[in-house]
Image (cartoon, helix red, strand yellow):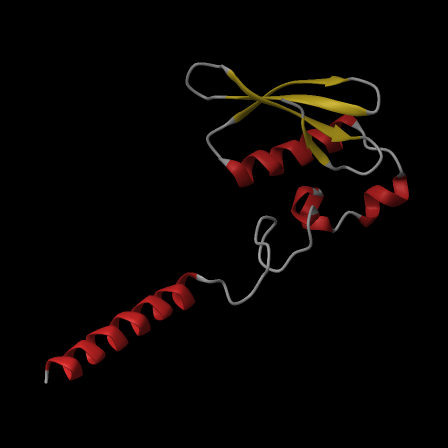
Length: 121
C-alpha cells in the first residue's frame, strides 16, 4: 500500500513540475516591444510607420519635428512637456521636461531624412 502511495505522489510531483515548466515557457516567440505584431522600429516613426509623405519630401521641417515629438511624448506619458528644440545638423534635438519641476528628463532627436525618433541620453 505504501509503495502505491509513493508512486502516486512521485507521479503527481513530476507532472506538476512539468506542468509548471510548460506554463512559464512561451509558446510563441514574438517581440511585443514595438506594439502588437509590428516589426522592430515601426512604432518609432511618425504615425506608426505611415510616413510616406516624409520620405517623398526627403527633409523634415522644424514644425514636423515638433509634431513627431509631440506624438511620441503623448504615447509615453501625456503629463510630460516638450522643451527647446534645436537644429543640430542631421537631426533636431528636443528636450522632454517634467511638468512639475521643469527638469529635463530625456533628450531625443528626430532624424531630418526619415523622421525616426532617436534617444540621445
